[in-house]
Image (cartoon, rainbow, N blue to C red; front, side):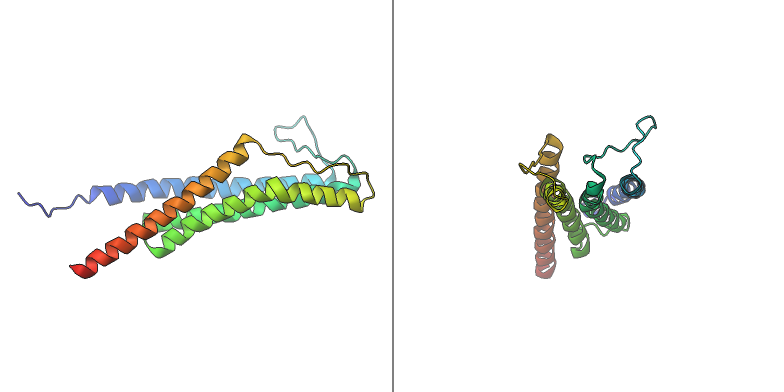
Length: 183
């Protein structure tokens, strides 16, 4: 019985799963990009047709505040798009069985960071932009409203977890490198 035999099916299976997930991620990039473009077009044109399969609801009925809605779309949409790009790069490395390299971990950390930025932008920056737009338009602004729902909390928790996983992968890679130097 040879104890040193390795099972090569696990890395190949991981590569196949990474390829599938990368294709799903690329589709999500296309979908999110289309949503950003559609939302931007709707805001700029004032188009909010509720009878279509996809509708856009504007928070601001006043046309002077449309730019704030456009900025809000971009504040959360563009960082999320960049997060998905990082995820696709990490999965492409996993396809090449380069799962634990420093570059893969950096892309995982980038994904976590930009999901965090997109979420915080939606929670904090978007209301600030809407408040500033109201003040600049001369409208009475009585309060700053920051909405936090369960999806936001979940996104923040997942970001934190991904930062932790990236740290674990970094530590595992360092330990593996140390063991290779000993042998």
